[in-house]
Length: 591
Image (cartoon, rainbow, N blue to C red; front, side, top):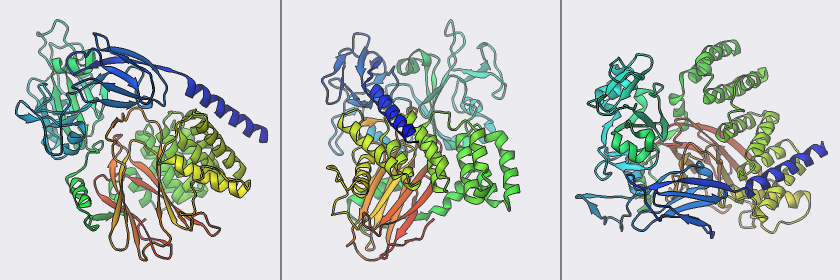
């Protein structure tokens, strides 16, 4: 067994070293949305590595996955991307720079032009804003002939998305695929849209569909019409400018409610109240209301009377949903929660492709569920697989070390954390400052002191925090946005804002790492009930996010006590009550 552990650690080190040192070539074009931009400065943040675009707007650059790329051009807004979040062929659209100080803005054609952050905040308030694959567009200032419609204008009798587009936009022609001169009905198999007239081009091209940043060349018939937030039509010339040849037949941009993570009116009002330092008066809902948002199969499972009935319900829905990894996560969670002794969850996982899909969000969610409900061996195997597949993820080291501690493999936990620390020192791994990195160093310090009687220079487990109550919040999807509210007995409050970063563009189709944060309630804090609430902002994937809360009382002392809770969150824009912490350090209240 010792030899196997040493082999695995050597494998991790070799994999990480090769991965971290290998350069990646990034190529692409930079435009202003209409024409290429020459001499754009494309460079790596905090490094002497860069290049300029040529007359066609083309660039190529060798970078590392841990780098951040900056695109800069005079008169245009600078854009910053994590290399780990983009593809090797990365096109960029630079928009005109806005001289904005508070409420003072520059005007173009009598309308004000706003930054992407301002458009993001205004999305739920103003109906002339649409989100495409690249950026947010304001109809009044985009420069394109955008037509935008609201989802509440959809007639449910339209049947599918083709029928919706035909009724919402004039001149939409539904034809059999490859026969633009013919017309057909929306429900006809193989039906497509030719946005421009069949005689206007020698070779008419079908329209494409940008759904929450994912571009589909076939009509997205899978869309739930009730889940559509906003639709825009971008004609062929605009589509060609923004999407290249893929958009020459025109583009329909579709934003769903589930992928909408912009702040609500209530969220904006909450910010205003926070800035005004008002006392905590947020309207909250119990986490139990999440059950109202559950899919039908999950409600039916929890309403079943015994294992036999539950298994029958699972098998009936499996025919329709088994390709959905979140269906697998839900039913695994249910059978572990209600019928763990039957071990059916192992067969459900084996019958699915959730492990082989290569998604860190899915793998980590599965690990969290298995760990929470006590199948530590399966969770250990899942976290080990995550580290093998994503050795560049600091969170993977933390997850595996924590499961080793639960399975009483303390020396293995210490080795994993020491390996992480060594890779950080050698600059072969990029730390998540303020997140998992701080927690890893805390855990490493505690383990080193306990099992080797040595101290770690970077140990963050300081005397200041000893005896405090530490709250660690972890979630499986790094695209998820949260506002965590920590409220003391006097209704003073602190908010963690984990919404979209101001300076970086985060692409939901290139997931990377999970996220962890910690918060301390001092041992001499005010007596009474402390509340921890959350406003979930969504994850852009039209899927729930799994959130784990770990509360450590008397942190770092011999009488330290730990309580854990796992939440499936899907309701957006509402402040949910997670749990309360009383003066005598008991976890009470919300489930």
